[in-house]
Image 1 (cartoon, rainbow, N blue to C red):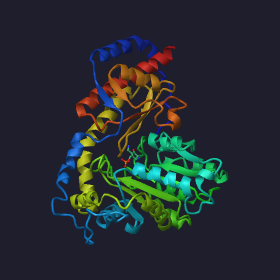
Image 2 (tube, helix red, strand yellow; image 1 turned 90 degrees about the vertical axis):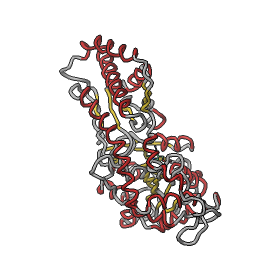
Image 3 (spheres, rainbow, N blue to C red; image 1 turned 135 degrees about the vertical axis):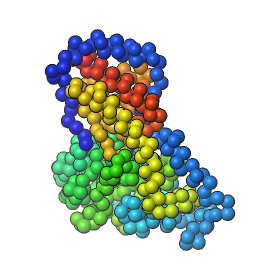
Image 4 (cartoon, rainbow, N blue to C red; image 1 turned 180 degrees about the vertical axis):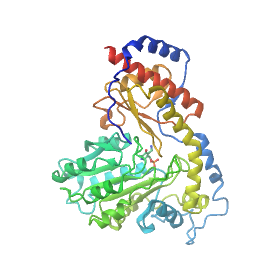
Length: 427
Ligand code: PMP
C-alpha cells in the first residue's frame, strides 16, 4: 500500500500556478479554520457505540463464570471469558493470551524494560548488559514504538515498508550477522500509518530467518486486527503459529487492545506469545501487580458476549469511519490526482492515510497547514527521532473530526501540498 516517492510533477507547470496557489492559500487562511487531523483517536460518535457498557456489569453482578469475584484481587492472567473471545479473534490459544490493563503500549514498554532488566527466555544476559541493543524499525512507522526505543537508549535502524509489510529481505540482512539486533517492530494488520497488511510470505520469512542474536524478538503489535474499513476483511498471518512451525516458537510477542473498539481510555489490552514467553512475562507481571481490573474485563465480556459480538460492533465503527476515509482519498484524488506532487495510501482498515509529498516539502506542508488553522501530525513523526531523511511523509488521521470538517481540512491540505510543491519548483 505504501508507494514510491512522488516525482516532482512533469508536464504540469507548477511554477506558472504559483500565484494562483498563493491566492488560494490566502483565501484558505482568511477562513480562520480550527481543524485537527493529528492523532488517531476515536470520535465521540464512536465512543458512544460502547456507551451501554458503562451500565455493566451492574450492581450485584460481579461473579465470573469460574466463580471468581471480579471485585477482589487475583486472576493475574485476566478473566477467562474475555480471553476466550479475543483468543478467537487473534488466532491464539486462550492459555497463551493474557488480558490486562487499558493500554497495549504499557505491555510493550514493560516487555522491553523486563528484557533490559532480566533478559528474555534464551538471553545470555539482560539486554542492558549488552554493549548495544538495536531494534529494526520499519518506516514509515508508529512514533510511540520509536519513543520507547529512544527513551531506553536502544539504537534504531530503519527498513522500508512495502505493501506486504516490512521489507523482509532488508530485515533478514540486518539480523543475520549483527547480534546487537534484538527486536523488530511490526504492525501486522492495517499498519500505522501506511495501512499495509503483512502477507503470509513475509510473516514466514520473518519468523524463520536466521538471527545472530539467540533471543531476537518480533514485537507484533496487532493494534488494528479487527478494524476494517471495507467488506474485504484482511486477516494477518498467524505469526505465533508460524514461528512455532519454523522452530522459533519464542520469536513473536503479540499485542492488541480494545482501545479503538470500546473506550480508548478504559479498554483492555492483550499480550500473547509462546508458553515460555507468557510464563516469563507473567512471572514479572506478578511482582508488578496482584491482578488486573477484572470488573472491566467482565464489563467487556458481557458487552460483547462472543467474538461475533466484537465483529458486529466493529461494523458499526466502520459505518462511522469509512465515509471519513473515503472523503480523504476522494479529495486527494480530485485535487492532486493528475499533478504528480504526491502519492497516498487507500487503506482497507486502521486509522491512517499516509501521504508522500514532494521530497523536502513535508515540513513546509505541515507549517502551511498550521498557519491556515489545520493541525497535522508533525512531519517526521513516522520516523525514528522524528527525522524523515527525505522530509516527505505525512500521516493523516481523519477519525476524530466530523465528516464535514474532514472534507474542509483535506481540501486545505491539498492546497498546502500544491503550494509547497510549487514553491519548491520555483526555488
Ligand atoms: N499500536 C499502534 C500501532 C497504534 O496505532 C496505537 C494507537 N495509536 C497503539 C498501539 C496504542 O494502543 P493502546 O491504546 O492499546 O496503548
